[in-house]
Length: 227
Image (cartoon, rainbow, N blue to C red; front, side, top):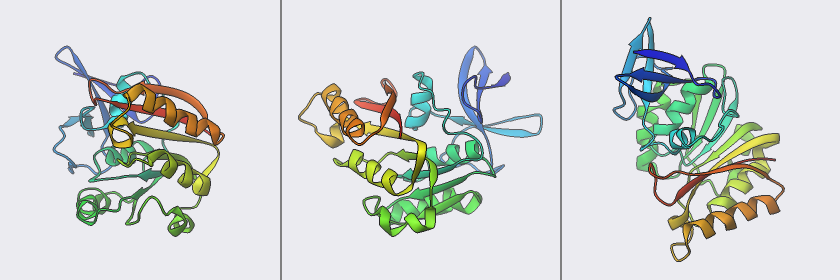
């Protein structure tokens, strides 16, 4: 077994084992699993295998998207944290000098997020709010380097833009996980992706990349943009 750094994303590693490769992050909370993921130990370090079928961010990395704006030491606003599968890996990546402000509105899901992730990771700050109302938590968060948005709502892009208006630094990055069927199930996914990209460009974002996430997620795409 070999573990080597990912060539373009600091804080992410590639594990080579039995002829196969896996994404992994170094565990910021040793001994703690979040979603039943495998933990690999090597030379006194723990690495958590990152499942692309359960994380759109991991899927986007494997599809070749440059996610290097998410790196150690930065401040991230995470919209739609759910139970923390992806957010926990982002916590590993940004490390002890970074911060993640994780927004989630569902009370049951937030309780799971608190027990699985926030309770074990001092760089994670849970925010029990509706992502549609960034004015209610922007003073707590302040300015961030990256906004990551993964909310299954028809107005997801508008939600992301509104949060960026309040909190994203000039030159900061947005990663938007677009769920075509959640936005408009009557249109072909490619048309939905095009419409949502146009919304971003009309608000001054520069689209850097878009990657379809199949076979990890059907009718999903990840868009990266900067403002």
